[in-house]
Amino acid sequence: MQSEFHAIKSFGVWMNSGMSPIVAGHEDQVAVDAVQARAKAVWPRIASDLGLAAEGARFRRLMVNSRYQHVRSVQVVQTATRQRYVLRTVFDEINAAKQLKSLDRHQQASERLRAVPGVSSPSILWRDRDSGVVLMEFAEGDTAYRALSLSDYGLGERAEVLRRIGHAVAALHRVSDVGDQRFWPKPFLKQVSTRAEAVRAGQFHVPKPKKFLGLCALLHRAGRAARGQVFRGAIEHGDLHLRNIMMSDTDVSFIDYSNHKGIYPYRDIADIWISNCPDHLAPDGCQPGFGGIASADWAAFEDGYGMRLTVDPLFRFFFTWRLFKLWSALAARPSYQHRRTADALAGALRVLDALLEDGA
Image (cartoon, rainbow, N blue to C red; front, side, top):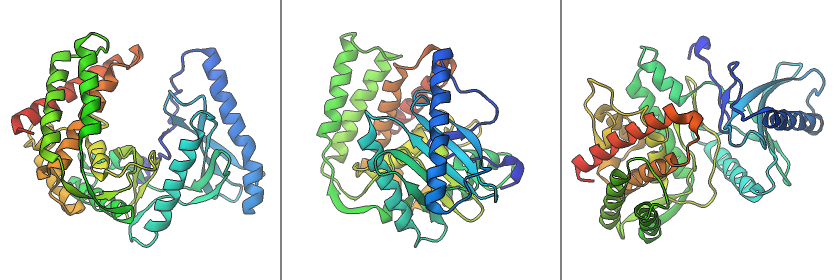
């Protein structure tokens, strides 16, 4: 990609382009600054262990999700000899065990993908086994989200970007294989029923509640259609949206793993298309396909992945399940996200209408 469009994102963060993180007030900003300082304080120990130059290192702060910036820090470290690394620190005692397991998952995927040309995860070069502090390779390139957006302006071919993403996701799932599994929807549908009952009773407030209840009914039908299906299980990435995929001219790299035990690879693929809803829905002039996504986009991604996902009942279930999770999350959006909430709801309604029309 051209250097002027270079973007970096590592472990759930955006490059800080000068915008300040969203914080509620002075006390929150003090907490954020304290986490950044605490992270920098670990650097001399890391540098000593790895034989790197500790003196003269420069730190560039990356933005993290505003919900976690009081306990997480991600910074690009450039040494005096111009080597670049990503320093990620998580000071979260409550979720420490989960964080460590997700790092184990990242490390395992990184090691297994070394044998796969053109697909990778940044190597973890140093980690503290008692906390979520790691130093990783610097991932070159743009996020897949940005690469796909730039293709709409003639900077790359959209279909080729999607084929590369599909191919890389398939490779990640192959090296994460856990063998043949059989799908039983009961645990998922129990959650759907519980949420639907809460909505009907006025105990859980979602936008467009009647439409949401229609989605719940659709999920029950989709669950019955997929019940008992045998599928090839793989340990999921856990948060596989397009900003957690980095792309260079030669490599597709996965970052920010958030799972260590889920084994439904279709959830990863549903995340790609639903997490940033409505960004990836078919624009005007494009033929919409399954779930309101452009037919051409599905064709390119499926070609790369090597499977007709949109005709598979189990994938259709998990795609609908991801819409259910998105819609449920809209109930908790804070007021400063009102515009984003409205956009996400409009996208969710489009996806639901497309699924109902398709008979999912």
